[in-house]
Image (cartoon, rainbow, N blue to C red):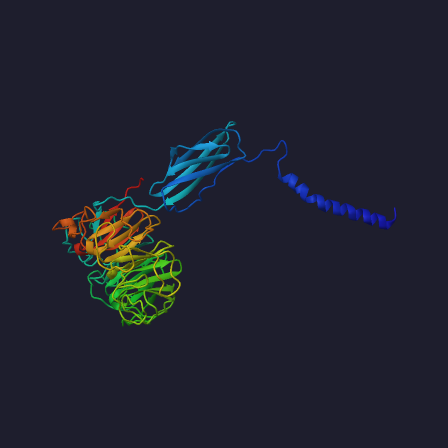
Length: 494
């Protein structure tokens, strides 16, 4: 054979081998007639660690892979078998989730005795409470019927704003004693003694002061699970700790509203605040209720002192600060609109929506997303049926000086201070003036008296509640005029 012909033959053989190679790989990857397919079950409707919002009854589906010969199957919720159905390779069940943690599992066994298993852990944020429920215990008092705590270390005189839990530590602000009390664990009974104090050098010190380790009438706390934020009201500033402070007088790392830790002059500017109250962290944003400036400020999480805010809500610019000023002339108007604020005391976000306790307008404003432009109008209002009413009211739909707001993916809690109660919505309000589902501190929605009519504190009553905070299966409420925080325990079943 000529040399050129032999080269052409070798080239053809090489090309043929290259073309056939993928098919050879495919044949080796797939089992032949005598091969064994891997059998398994995969939960297809939900993912591990998923947070469930909305109704607690979910429809679960799981798919059987390569398993046509099913002898039996089981669907389990927290170790208890639940009713399920199977259609060919799909197993399904309707499950009523418990509060908080839920382990959902699916198991199937073939006729040959081979068992497959899959599970996911789901979180259903919810605290099951009841109208006029008794608090489980008090912090700041030795029991639920006293206002006589005399031990300086344990005393709480002004439970003013929302508490926080960070790294297992509980932080309770006290505006009257100019400090934040720190507990290494969340207490489980009345009369607990704190482990450290922020804002003072020791528990016996109660005078307001400046500096990186001082506080003067703190208004509230917030955390993103890493940082701690404290609004320092009479110092007109916001303090940030980059990690959980766990020792007495631990200094803050960053100050906002002032250019340094020694200045406390209130003003109306992008870099200034005037007696701020509540705060919240939403992703990489810090949101602060700048109370006496009648606005809410939003920062990209600052890393240096005196950083300027990026967005303002309630005002048309960073240099106008009158209440209910909707014509942008810097003067207060006769009443509120969807864009204005009057003395906001708290802010909170569920990660999607932003809630503002617009306190002197006796309402809570709801924004369906975090505003990115100045003077953004609210999407909804709670406590009123429209955006132009301001008078205080009671009932299931009214509010009187709401001072704090908190919640989870499924519930909303509002400290309705002037009505001496906390209102609870068991689902996210979707319409203006949505009625609350239950009330704490009162026997019904129409009663608004201090301690539900009692002359003295009780386990069921409240007197001008302020900060409200849900953590796990607990709801913590600042009971201002009773000089205590009260803790309500939810049950862990639907």
